[in-house]
Length: 116
Image 1 (cartoon, rainbow, N blue to C red):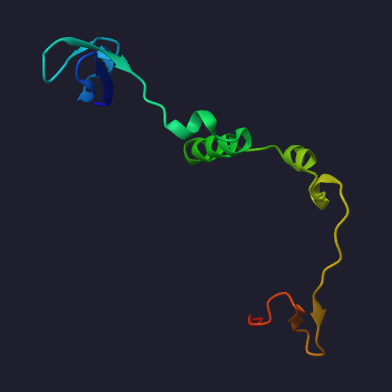
Image 2 (cartoon, rainbow, N blue to C red):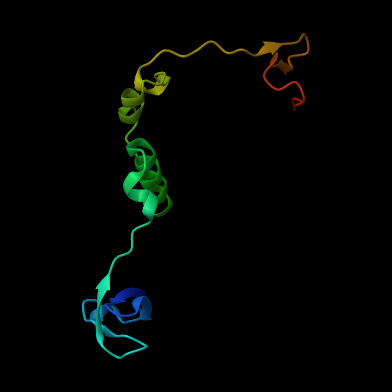
């Protein structure tokens, strides 16, 4: 059962466990017993937050629960990333170097890593 917030005119905000079927019904105040209407509490910074920062927060929360899947190339065009050879783009030249024995070397990429 979810927890809903209610506000009593005399005693302020309180929380109650309630079934989802009864989400719209008022709940009795635990102190005085009068019926209190349901309220939705918003974080104080949410209303004054920079719109770009707010959009970042919304996207982060959404991506935790609803990850998006994009068609190949569609999102890349939107963000201006480099084309993929599979999509008809050109392939970048590899930065790998080969030794006389045929081992690959990647200069300055990750000098601490060893090749197989």
